[in-house]
Every structure is written in C-alpha cells, then in structure tokens.
Length: 575
Image (cartoon, rainbow, N blue to C red; front, side, top):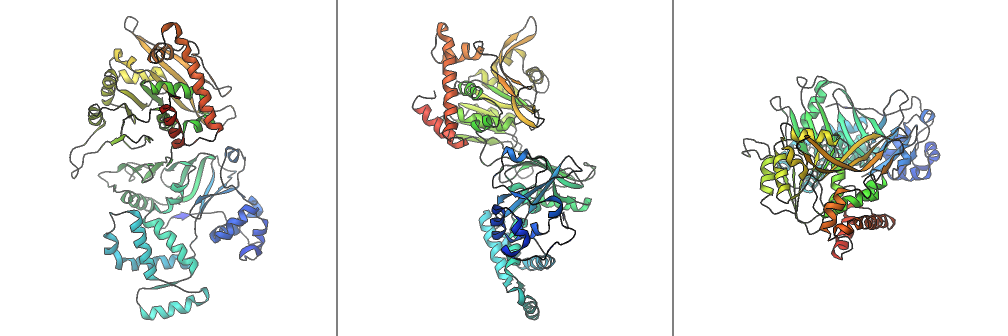
C-alpha cells in the first residue's frame, strides 16, 4: 500500500546540509530544539527540509499548555515519546491548521530494503505465527530477533560492496547502515505490532479524536489546538479499503462486505468505529478513533480547566457519598464519560462497584470493581449478552454502586428498578436538558413510568460550548435536582442548583439555601434534624476548601486524589 505522507518542504536549499552543530539551520534553532536534533537525527532531517524562509523557525514546547493554543499562527514542535515529534503549522487558506508526525524517515534505499525484508520475513512466518496470540512484548522481541538475523550492519561507505558480496551468497541477509537499521526497526514494530501510519497519532496524548471521513486527509481534534488536519492522506478508494481491512484485522475484528461496520476497543482503551466499502459510505471507507487517557482526568484537573467549580465538586462528593442516583447527560463528545470517571473518586474506597458498558470506557480506581461488557452474538461465542442481561445479573452481586456506560434502551427500566431497591446508580445519557432527558426516559424504547422518574435524584448537564473568548470548551452547564412528578398536572418539578453563565464563563449557585437534595435528603442522612438542616451548607463549604487545598498542595492526579480521599474518609475527615 502506498500511502501519501506529505510534509512541508523548501523549494530550494538555502545552504549545504551539514551534520551536527555545524549546520547553519541548527545555529538558528532555539537551544531546547538544538538539544533535540542532537539526539534525533530524523528531526534534523525534517527541519532541514522546512521552508524556514516562509514559515520561520519552529518553537519547541516540551509540554503544551493553554497558552500554546492561544497562538494565532502556531509553529510548534512537541515530543510524544519514543523519539517521535509532532509539528503544528498554520494553514492560512483553511480553518484547520496542519499536524505533521515526525518519525524516523525512510529514504528510497530504505523503502527498497523494507521490501526485501518483507520478502525474507516469509521464511519466519511459522515462528511468528506461534506467538500471534501471545504477549506483545514477546512478539516484538521475536520480530527484532528476525530483523537481527536478516540485517547485516555495515558502514555507509561499504554498503554497495556489501550488497554485491551478499548477493552472491544469496543467504537471505540484507546489508544496512546503522541509521537504516534503526529506521527499519521502528517501522517494523510500528507496522506489525502497532497501527501503522496511525501509531504516532494514537501515541499523542494531546489528541482526542482521529477521524478519516473517506478519501482525503485524516482529521484530528486536539486538546490544545482544536481542529487540525494531518499529513496522512488517502488518495484512492483501493488504498483506503486496504488500510481499513488491515486495521480491522489488527484489532481482531475483520470487516467484510457482509459485516461492514465494526465497533471495538484498542489496547490503550480508545474506542474505534470502522465502516467499510463505498456501498455504505459513499466517500469511501471511514473510521473514527475516540481516544481516552490512560490515566483519567481528575475532578481537580477538570475544575482547573474551568469545567466546573470546587463548590460544585464538593456538592457532587456529598451526593455520591450518600448514594444519590445521578445521570450525566449531554450531547456526543461533551465530556460526559470524562466527568463521570472523575466523579468516581468520591465513592468510598471500600465500596463494591459494578460497571456495565457497551464499549469499555469507564475507568474506576476502586479495587473491588466488577467490569462487565456486552457480548455480540457470533457462531463461536454463542448467544449475545446485552446490557439488560448484565444489569439484571448485577442486582445479584450486592454492589454499592452500579455504573452504566450509557442508557439507551430496555436496560433503563432495570436501572430504575435497581434504584427503587436501594442500589445507587450512575449513568451517562444523551440529552441536552432535563426536559429532553425525561422525554427520552418516558418514551419508547426506554418507557419508564412517569411515577418512577423521581427515583433519579440528580441530572448533570454537560456540554461543549462557545466561551466568551470565542474558543470551544466543555462546561457543566446545569446541575439539577429531580423533586417529583405531579399526576394531576402531568408535570415534573426540579431545582437547578448550579448554572453556567455563558456571558461571563462563571457558575452560579442558584440553589444556595434552597437545595432540596442537600436539605431534605442528605442532611437527614447525616443526622441533622429539620431545625438544623441548613448546617449542611457548612459541610459543603468545608469540602470545597478541602478540595482547594488538594490543588494547592499539588495533589491533582486521578489516583492521587482517590488515595487521599480514601484516607480522609477512613479518618472521618471526608465522610
């Protein structure tokens, strides 16, 4: 497969390329970028080919921050580990800027050598097949062992003579330079064990979505630079179909014309959707990868990002500690699962949690966690196991909390039955307001009786919004308490306790001294009589200050916060 990986190039060489610090371009680079090109020759090759006279000298950012994204015309290189780099460049003709992955490059000779290597790998296919179901580290070790058997490293000046000599032997070995060997090693592991040309994108911790909509470039959603387009471009349908087939085989769920749509999960937890063939996707096969952090974003980090306030986080901690039923609702890609993951650190560390999902996305820090996933019906695995089946089974497992990835069908009725029997439930839901959420719950196919709806205590509305500065951002725009259903008027009553102000990008505590859940539900559970129920706001303030102190003391990571809160709960500080 010939896949186009375009990159910016200077039309004319302004100087003779020299190695190391003697190169004129190196002298122009900022010091931190000079240090990088010294350890990564392929980065120097890339920079040397850039049209410096047009785009200027790139900056090097070891870590990206919000300020990096504020640049009008970003020209930034940043590392993603393993000797790989990303270059962000402006495109004055398009709304999306450029995203270039910088990898160990392949010269024409290296492409030829890779083809020879592929041919020689056939002799080792049985040895590699024996490891096809084993650990990745074993297969990688085996591939590198095969590479060492095939490649003979020689000095650059001796390459041609070595080729002529080994050609006469015809023993399957290939002469390469040290640089070519390192390039081959990288590309072999990338293509055989990784996701091929997508591997740098999957490894980039700043990417959220990787999207191929058909013929053309791969589009990206970046945490800092937002909408981008990559230098990976599919130029014809055959090339794209071949890549999607290879991708599906790599994840163990081959697409076919009979089964053209595949949903799966990558080893790092990212979610992937594949649609194969022009008959169902008119612009050609397409795929989308929704990336998830290996370590979830913590509630403190979400507050620092502006997604909610410490006071709102403290309110949620009280609600979760006392077993309230919560739905995190919003449109696609609004940050529902991210928020729900962050909220799980408020659940007591001793709780037994059962999570039920269509595609595994929920990440919970608790050791006593049963993680259950639906199973589609196949000839080999037998009958399907759906959300309904798993939720029904969860009721027999005596969990303290049931977490449902997303409610969209008949499993909703079981979830509300669980709430009625005292099982605390939390789930994500697709609806952008309380009214629409209730409409979906009471309508087909979920069909919850209206009198059951008030078993749900809180509705958190999460949304992707336009901030006052014009940039997109994720905000918890509304936190609502479901009070009850009035049959005579056929209406629901609810209290909006927190509200986001879009004009100021600030949050209002509209339910202060008027919160039904705090005063009528949580206060009695904490032993406060009706005459003292408003003392619950003092507890809310205390928790707010405690969460702020965590941030001030540098305790911001997901697992760090869970550990600190678990200890605080044990000592009675965060009960």
